Length: 104
Image (cartoon, rainbow, N blue to C red; front, side, top):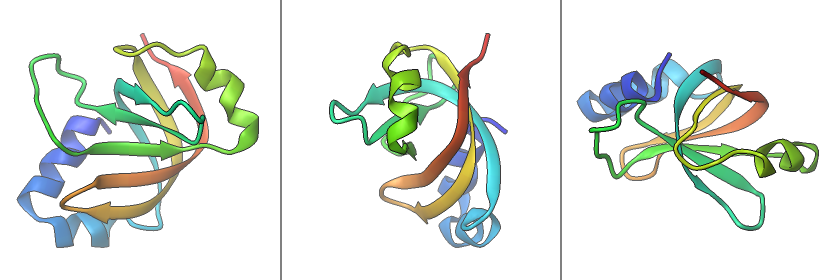
């Protein structure tokens, strides 16, 4: 699924989105919007360049994944597989990454 679809579901009904995704393994593709300088997480936003949103998908990393993310660049399309750990109307989605890659 895309970050666009997740964010649309969140906007339409945050409770329903939480029930559907929290604690589940998901695959999400979105545009890299931010990489945390400490290497704890990065953020994905909509795949459509003209979309503007205040929420997104924060992807939390373990120590062994930092070197992979160090090679990413803002604006790249990234696909992440992991467990959705939180869903909220203010912060958006948070997930723990199991794997990630640049998508063309």
